[in-house]
Image 1 (cartoon, rainbow, N blue to C red):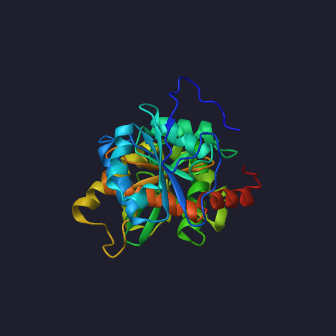
Image 2: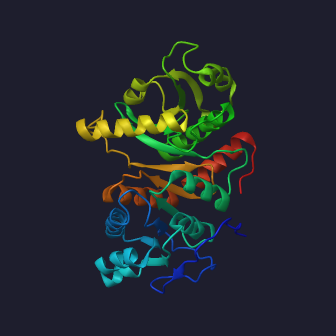
Image 3: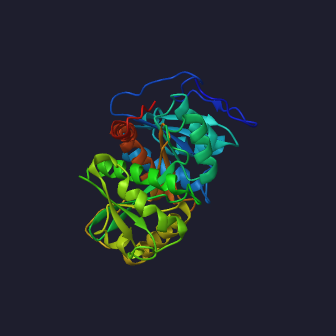
Length: 331
């Protein structure tokens, strides 16, 4: 049963183009991915979101999109598609609360995952309320992937918990280790804690106290705490497979490195760059968050990431891994 949303919600007006009646739970065909897209999310929405939705739809013939937003933005997508492609589009027409509308599409079973470049705080609160948090999780973590000289690195949090406590960062270590194992197939991931130096006692009060807890913390997938890491270690990727930090520092680091890589190229030019999007870990659903400044290709990559994570059952697999490691039953 879907929990109520507090506050005034403008009901969506559903159209018949590939649409399912509100409240009716459906299951997609094998291999398909039904992604709810927030048309008003982002600094340059809806134009860049329309562009991203078109790119994603044309690139993946098994992709089905639920477009949540104003009629004119949804019509722009439909008008640019061929008749056969339009059958893979559902629209939920609403002028406001598009983030909540996209979350509800997942909560009610009308979509398998959602993508938004909207306000992170609103999205996290809505996803936690409507989809539910995993047991033990108080603050879900935005989990991003960065290219490094050694391959790829999982960085969390990158914007959800800007002022976490020790228990939150300990959960980030668990979540990041499970992500690296399930999504990147890393054996016994190494988890590092980001701070200003690798010598013991470096950092603020929280980071000075946390290493003792992380050394003793059981981690999933045979992961182990590898010690303190600096910003340079994030670029090199040799000290850790997962780097844990607060959402404020992680967001600053992520945006700085992404801008630097856009100007100079990634540290490993042969590696395919990961999508500029983050998975919200700790809620019972696949929620992908793009930058507010995302462009059309970034939105398309975020949609492709959400579809891939759904098809691989990644979020459920991460939850199962944590449950097996800690004896916690996830819904």
